[in-house]
Image (spheres, chains in turn yellow, cyan):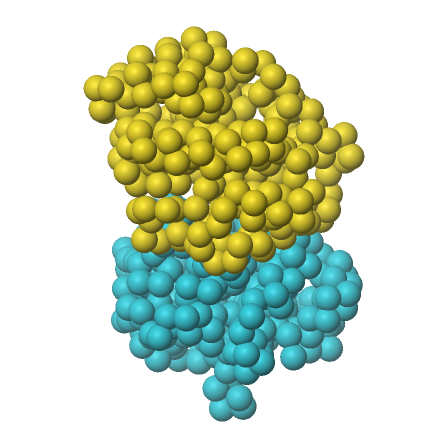
Length: 253
Length: 247
């Protein structure tokens, strides 16, 4: 299976939900314990302070296991050098996409500063994954509006709308051809509904691993195990965990 | 004894749960007692049908199901009449969902119902989360105005308002957190080790039928706290809130 939403430790910046530090070896041991073959590893420090150094650190982390770990860096979109940093992330550091967290980083998806960033990302075969599920800056409708401005760029809703906006996230995924939905922290009943109604090739799964107080990432292991209780079919499970993420990553490059 | 502090019985928009299914799950998981609320439609609109449904389920359960009462506060005096009926039929706590019921926790509509709960000695469960009308900190402000009434912060702000759960619990000492959806190794451990909060301010709930109940229980069982704290989380605290004289 491919876990489409995990994080590095917060090495420099996080003061809430930072979890314990861990190395790439320990992270791969967690993946093995949960049956995860590949993981998308998203920037963590960069969400609090989007520096090139944060992307360098991420690249070094995933570089330890290039066949198991896939890195998504970040930028602050209002910085003038953001498009150039996205180009560096993808074409020099070997990262595969951009993670944005609009409410944590403090910008709106409607800001035009995002356009040159998305253009570089699309030209480089990258993927955009955004936090979603939380007003005022991270709703599925807002992220879908950005996706419509960049129809050749795959855009992923990183949390499937969470508890209170999952119906909006689902509707946006259905009506937006280049929008995908990652079930991650989404409640089980909503996950089941998303899997039954979204285009079957568009649903992904993530654990949000990396924030735990234990290197073994206990909650992430539990989230994988919990899928057994969702009441979904074997076909839905395989598509979400294997076929869909594999196809999306293959299409990106 | 394990007590599930919040379950909804009936048919919601995407979910359904009836008493026989619930009791079978409780048997399988070793849950002794569950507090049961009506379904979404009955919380929002048909309060009478919902209260009667959970009262009947509780009456047939040989003490294993304890009914919440619901009444939409927009109904004014009729809401209080409904709570009286529910109390006479066995309800022992008030259940509030400001999103389904369409009001703001601080607009005053709920105040008469909270006076009723205070007089009845009922704890009050309030569903919280991301909607602006259901955030943890406004609930804490509300709870402080009824300091003798325990309030349960249903879902503890899951998920992005987990960040407000600790400040809300610190602000209102009569506010209690809910374990549903919360990973032990991120959220619960933070609340549990806070000297102003601690594990005994948290109550276990499965929030069925929205969840995988076995996963909700497993998470609390996996949480490395001492036996006294775990007993409180799994039932001791909610039993004290329901009946301070007996526990």
